[in-house]
Each structure stands twice: as structure tokens, then as C-alpha cells.
Length: 165
Image (cartoon, rainbow, N blue to C red; front, side, top):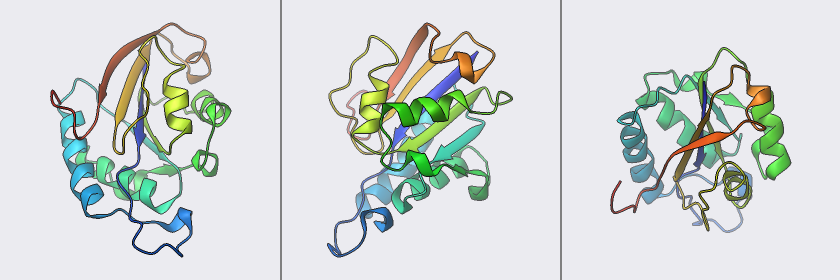
């Protein structure tokens, strides 16, 4: 079985409007939300064994915080250029080429692509994935290349301001 977690990066800073979008860091709320969400996800019945992220600063930092919560080294995060600004096909390409030895993978990326992709994975629809939201599905497959075509089971959708999270 393969399990996929889609994680939108935590809240980023707009303090310096001249800064390139790619280089924007987390703001104070993002620095608070990321470890809280990582801890919440760690309490769920999933054991993430691979962390894959957009190389943008805010996504990288969010992924590293989650990796540390799951007792992985922050340097264990894999970065994929195509996840920065990815659309549905970018996510599909990433998922279909994930290493098969990993059963549960968390992918960290950006809106609007991450919401669009999440909405293709199950009958559960999300209007907009808030910052640091996590959307999880699983499929009874052995290879990631078979994941997209397989019937998937919705596991959960959680986000920092979720009243039942």
C-alpha cells in the first residue's frame, strides 16, 4: 500500500515586497503552525518515510520541520524543482517517479497547484488548501507509477485552524 500526504507550505512572510517569491521565508505564524501540524500528523496512523519538497525557501523550511518531527534529518528531504509552481501534471510526474521502497511520502508545495491536484485524488473536494494544510490518501498498490490510476481511499484533511484537528 502507498500513502501520499500533500502539504501546503506554512504561512510565508511578505515583509519585504522586493524579495523574489522563491526566497520568501516563513513568517511568525508559519514558524508556529509548521511544528504544531507536524506533531498532529505524527499522532495519526501514518509513518512518513520520505519527504519531498519544492526548493522554494518556505516549502523547504516546512518540510524540514516535518522531517525533524518524524525523527529524520533535515538533510533527508528530497527537493524537486518541478514542485515550485507545479500544476497537476507536475504533481503527477513527481508521484509516478517516487522510489517504490517508500510506502508513505509527504510532498510539500504551493497553491494553486496543490489544491488542484488534491481534488483529483478522491471524491473529497477542497476549495482551497490553507497554509500548512495536509491532505492524505492511500491506494492498494506496490508501485508509485500505479498510484494515480488506482482507486484511492481518503484518509484525512487537516489544517492549523481546523476546530476538530
